[in-house]
Image 1 (tube, helix red, strand yellow):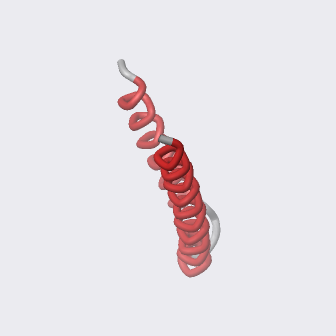
Image 2 (image 1 turned 60 degrees about the vertical axis):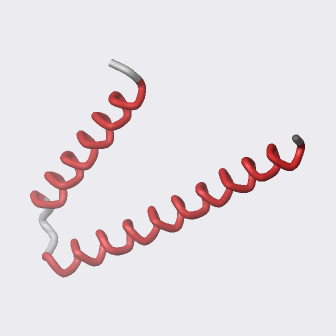
Length: 65
């Protein structure tokens, strides 16, 4: 199995585990949805930062050439 498929399988398993944990949580739906929104916003912010860092690195490499 190549690295890309391994990473995809890991992420799918992590998402399934997270979904199961949320469905079995003893908290109310309102609290869970709020937590999901907050975590999604954090993940989106982190992803955006990493993408921008990657683009900056690519730009720096291209400027060197």
